[in-house]
Amino acid sequence: MVKEAGLRERDAVFSEEPIEGTSDLSLLNATASYEGSYESLMHFLNLTDHSPMLLMLDNLQAAPQQKNGQINTSIRFQAIVRENASGSAGGQP
Image 1 (cartoon, rainbow, N blue to C red):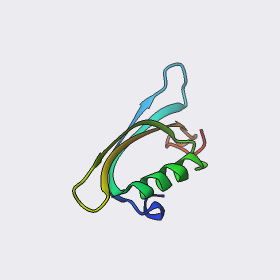
Image 2 (spheres, helix red, strand yellow):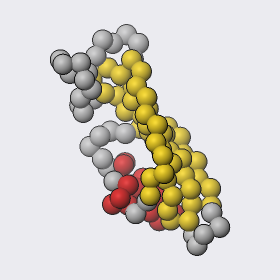
Image 3 (cartoon, one colour):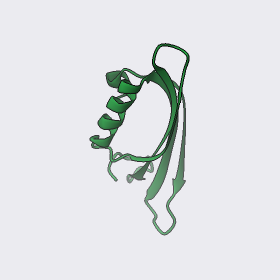
Image 4 (tube, one colour):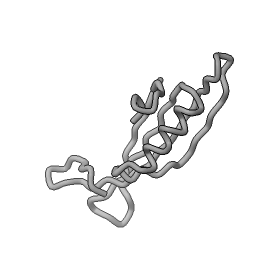
């Protein structure tokens, strides 16, 4: 989605934590920094909003840069993932 929107990913951090009271659900936290135009950021947010992955936008920070209309942004998404029978995370919430 990042490439399709025209953003450049700079760095990303992922963490997973169990959800209390469940044996097979975890909360996946994904925080990433991007660079691009405001229009690219809006396109990316629209793509994530309509994504079948059911991403929850937790935090977004954006700052303008001195380059022509570029912004740097940091976005934190969360998603609930279900562990499958083999113990690895599956894509179905």
